[in-house]
Image (cartoon, rainbow, N blue to C red):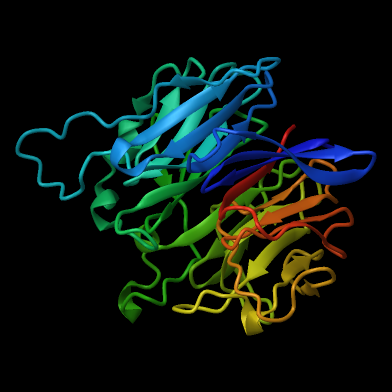
Length: 362
């Protein structure tokens, strides 16, 4: 069980500490800065914080294990667009939307997903980055488009713990893509998903799917879970085929967390689709399945059940390595933690800045 977790928020990075069995808000870092995402690298204890400074651009900071000093490092940057390119997308990094460590056998390797849909790789702990041109140059990228943003974005990166060269990414809106050779080549992998926002004849087009979040069961890596714009899906064969699952009161939402060892257990956060984007009935709940999506239990104890308008973003729900401790943060500054797989929730704060992402320290 972890004793520390992190909240990436509109006004800084905040630590949560477990002291004598109770969680509490601890130290703050980069206070006042919009921290869009944090990666706690379990391989060497390094902490990475991505910042979105608007007019001043996207920044990336690193804090080494045992140090209290943050150092700005290189942020992923697109090369100049070739002269005469017909690509209508602006080749400028607008947001680091996902940040993941490479495999245990790849010290220093990091992956970053960005808006407008580019994947980047670093081999030196973020000191330099290279655009993964093999994915950027796939012909289907011409079909990608923005979902919540006006350009596509890569928000999910899943590295297979059995083979570090097997990498899966999810794009809004561009489907799911897989590489088996460390990013040298890519195959689209969204069979079974459905895009109801497209004309009927195009709703099964894999290149226009809008997965909101994809996560992998670390203990059974062929099992993946997806919260999609048009529902929820599960794959039991590494993403080659996706099977739709449904939950009441809603199959719409953004966040999903996979149990680290049990391939049948996952958690989702339902919301009202599509324009309202609030908890169903203004009452916050977490949907949990323990049978692979055949059925779901609504978990509400300790969560606000009246006049609640908190939305949980894609990276706003996390499960610890113990498979029982859950952390959730909302757009309205609510932070909740559960020690019993979501059965009961304790409120840590209702006054934090808007929470973009949460994670546990490995």
